[in-house]
Image (cartoon, rainbow, N blue to C red; front, side):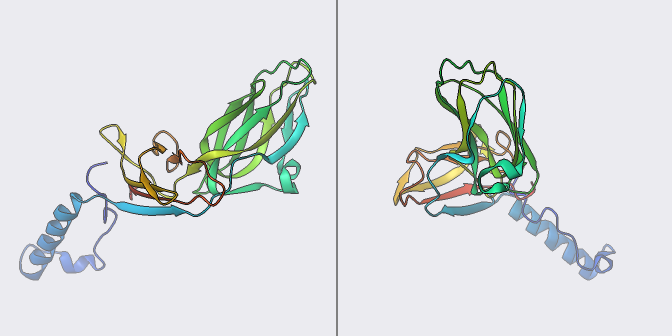
Length: 229
């Protein structure tokens, strides 16, 4: 992104008044160029606040089910609450597998849903024994799960959400570093959070605070975003 991108999609309200090369038309055209040149050097900044986002919950999307020797699909009606699961703010999805009675885990779980912009979003998360495996993408809604066939029916698994929070605007990077100007976590200015920009974690990038959500923890982020995205 070159410059701030502010006003990059703006045009004259009455184009016919700008036609011509002299007089008032020329002065207005010159003024528009001056404004564009000045604004181009500015960064588009925003502040986003997350008030007490929920603590990570390993079974908030799909309650514990038994591993199956055949591929399985879980529609929205099979999810917690009997409907597609909304995550506000958007969060990363997690897959938790127990050790089971000798279960051998294999393959992936495909998470299907929507991002913060309402666009389709998918992610594959590996089945891993005795572990909670976090996804990286921020889902605003989970609508469907597709599980690969397992080697046996000796284990249990469940789906929830983790500590990663999706941002509301497209975070940009400058010289390889996320353009975050200030991070406030639980009332203190810190630099301990983990940020991924929009190019890595679409649509807007993500934030993982070092002090995990839950228990009344609040966060505020000041960052540069791409207004043309």
